[in-house]
Length: 90
Image 1 (cartoon, rainbow, N blue to C red):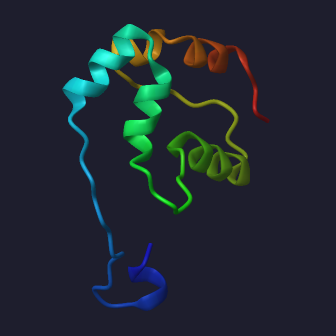
Image 2 (tube, rainbow, N blue to C red):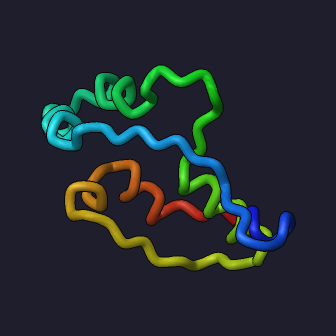
């Protein structure tokens, strides 16, 4: 998204922190979502974006009301995605 407004070969500056997924996976299976959130939030003071929120905004602007979602079995079986399948955001 930087190259278009800035031209040339510009790219976004990114700082990436990678968490150890084995630790997160163990907490997920324990149902310890608070500890999972603390790891994933990484104690940052900047706003975090949820990819589903950003995607929903673009879909709404484009008038798209039906989309597919791919994910791991664990992710797709969680209650929040089952609810989303039954919910219309438009």
